[in-house]
Image 1 (cartoon, helix red, strand yellow):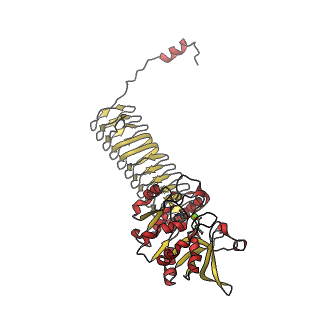
Image 2 (cartoon, protein in one colour):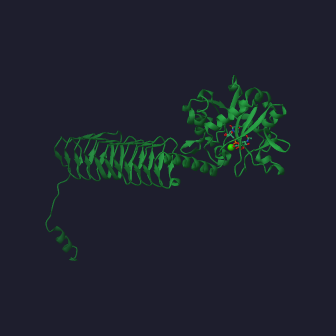
Image 3 (cartoon, protein in one colour):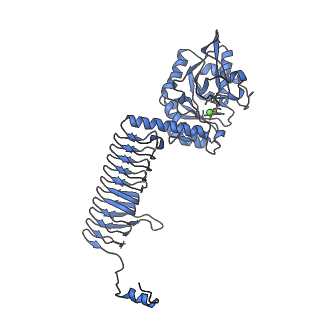
Amino acid sequence: MAAGKGTRLKSRLPKVLHEIAGKPLLAHVIATASKVVPPENIFAIIGHEAGRVRSAVETTGINFIVQAEQRGTGHAIMVAHGSLQGFEHVLVLSGDVPLITPETIAQVRDFHVSNKAAMTVLTARPADPTGYGRVVRKLVDGDPTHEVDRIVEQKSLRDDESKLQEINSGIYAFAVGPLYAHIDRLTTNNEHREFYLTDMAEILGKAGQRVIATPASDTKEVLGVNTRMELAQLDAQLRDKKARELMEAGITIFRPETCGIDADVEVGPDTVIEPFVQIIGKTKIGADCRIRSYSVITNCTIEDRVLLLPGCILEDSVVRKGARLGPYSHLRPGSDIGEDAHVGNFVETKKLRLGKGSKANHLTYLGDADIGEGVNVGAGTITCNYDGVNKHKTTIHDGAFIGSDATLVAPVRVGRGAYVGAASCITADVPADSLAIGRGRQIVKEGWAKQHRAQQGGKQK
Ligand code: UD1
Ligand code: CA
């Protein structure tokens, strides 16, 4: 179920597209469900901003059901009727309960099937049950059984029910036959004027069907996201889990609570991650690296023994073995930093291949450039890659030396082993092993300064 608006988030973004650990809530649920049943048997009920929700998760290969008007969780399941023809059982998950695990979903399914139930509810006993529907179990001689009498929503709790601790997780298994044989008995006779799926517990029970509950082994798995606070709490929980997994696999993370590492990130052993680092998306980091503080790495491949000094921002790039970056290097998409290469402070790159052992250590822009091995790029070098209409390429061959403050006006090529004099504006190709100097010649006027001061009133010091 993912059709709701998520009013309590006060957002223009549909609730299920809000992200925790770098992925929309719904994407977490779909990824988990896909480990239990094949994607062709998964249906997402969408409605509010359906187009946007669909396109965010379309690549998962699941199916979609549109609930055009959102009249409650019961109504969502009514709308799904046609799609469930031919299925004997259906597992119902909530798009806003993202930490559920495949094991727990399988537990609900197995408990449901082995007990031949019409409805099985996954429950929990959180420290604070406020806001959740409560499960009222049937009693035998005053003791609760695993059969459910009814589910009462928070707003409908009577005084004597307010102490009920067991909550409805919003995750269920239903036998499809009895569900749809009785679903038209749901009414909107409640606080929200909605069809509550939870009312099916009482309806099926009264129809002589078995309605049972099974508790989740870990309460954290069934926490829902209805507010921004809960969004932040669940994000923190997933980040914490990820950091623990990495630490168990041999990665050092100092102050893990300050780091944001996305679920799909991979890191090799003995890499050290310092405080306040973000590692985002499909980033892969090798072994024996050190990622110093305030670095943000998005969708990058970083090989072994790489050192990132503080404050590096890297996106869609590759950094090869033994390279050293930073502090404050900015790799924009398409950068490929070669083995043992150095990229220093305030160096910005884009679509750059920097060869093995090459260095660009200070205050430089290298865009649309192909730089060979053992090249030294001096401080303040700029590739002028854009003529206002098109982008052009700069090629620098192995062993070249680019003096400080050179501007390389692309398209241009600097040959193997060539030198470019400092402060040159290079507009034509430089042949191999030559020296190119492209700057105004220096003029020296002997005594000029002294004379100047004398003319200004003789205030000589
Ligand atoms: C629901 C349960 C509550 C349970 C809680 C667990 C009902 C009436 N109550 O409450 O007992 O404790 O979940 O998290 O079911 N949705 C639709 N279409 C709709 C309405 C909702 O698809 O018309 C989807 C929402 O997008 C969401 C899910 O159903 O993913 C749950 O809806 P929500 O409004 O968040 O229900 P809760 O108030 O949390
Ligand atoms: Ca909810």
